Amino acid sequence: MPKRLEFARLEYSEAGGLSEQNSLNRPARKGFVSVHIPLAFPARTSLRTRSGKALFASSSSLVAMALMTLSAIAHADSVTLKNGDHLTGGVTQLAGGKLTVHTSYAGDITIAFDQVSAVKVDKPVVLSLETKRGKGVDVRKVEITAIDRTSDGFSVTTTSGAEPFPTAAIAIVRTPAAQQAYENSLHPGWLHAWTGTANISFALAKGNSDTTTLGTGITLARPTHTDKTSLYFNDIYTHDGIAGTTTAEHTNAGARYDHNLNPKLFAFGTGDFAIDVLQHLDLRTVAGGGFGWHAIAKPRQQFDVLGGLVWTHESYGAFTTVNSTPPPPTILTPAITHSFAALDFGQQYTRKLGAASSFTEQAYIFPDLNDTSQYRVTFNSGISTKINSFLSWQTTISDVYVTNPPSGTKDNDFILTTGLGFTFTRK
Picture 1 (cartoon, rainbow, N blue to C red):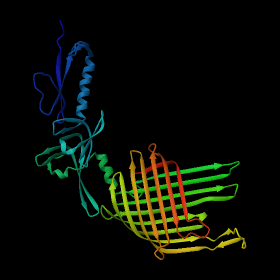
Picture 2 (tube, rainbow, N blue to C red; picture 1 turned 45 degrees about the horizontal axis):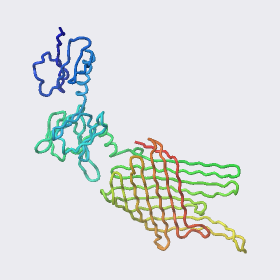
Picture 3 (tube, one colour; picture 1 turned 180 degrees about the vertical axis):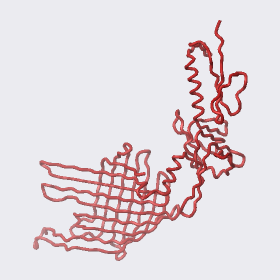
Picture 4 (cartoon, rainbow, N blue to C red; picture 1 turned 60 degrees about the vertical axis):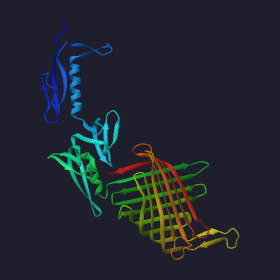
């Protein structure tokens, strides 16, 4: 004669926790999750499926399975949709009308929030109520454990109880850690929020050839909600040891600061410096500013148009060149200094390509206000592809054209660099 199995019921509720109920006849109470587990049965119990296939389980494994089920239920957030469907996981954020839930079986799942009727979380999340005040943002934080849609808005469960909220107020929900990171981004310290890339290339040849080439490039950016600071430096040097000549020595460096006046309009200030030994440019200094317009401002694509005024000061050193039809055998070109005001017209474009690559491009023209037939054009472009969290493959193009270089020198300098680079972030 088979042994009689005895069962007990375990119930879980957020208010009362886990409790044992010794009656099978009482229905599960509202707000409770119940699981029936056997208290006494043979050490090896035979169960059969509808198809008649036998399954075997020990008493200890069944108890463990029941407790694991209760534990998973107890520590999972839940989302109820308007159509009655339920989803469990971890609520990570609500932004842009989308609710994101992280699940162990499908990763992040995004749900249109207008299709959600209720959200319940195991650990409090932060409802962020933001009000723009001038150029700043006032943030009021409310810790919540549940959101229920009502006929005229939402009922939100806080630490002090349920409160009604209008529909427009339920727009941004973050985890406490994500909320803290967002607040830090509103007012970062000067040494924080920097991102950048750096690459160094070196080539050496000895024997029948004797050349040395060194190239470096660094770009830094510190974007915030109200402004952006950019720094750059690049240099290339090549020396031919057999001929005893330097065949390339060019350095560019600069800084720029943008400040948003409104979501579309910004003011900027810029400073640039250049040295080109083969063009006999000892130093070119450009400083100025103006206004720009965010023609496209999207997370994956941005296009800016800008214009302003700059002051340019450039010094070319004296040099001699060999005359192919003497006399005289050489020609002396005296030192030249230019100082003038110029217009500054330009555009810059950035775009993310897939998950790992980004493309940047910028072009500027600087007409001399004293003689608009004389001008300088600069063009810079680059593409960067991340290999891992800190390594990337980078290719950059730089071109500078001037209409009035010293006699005997070329009016255009073109540089192409490609190689392995380093990506870094200072939060």
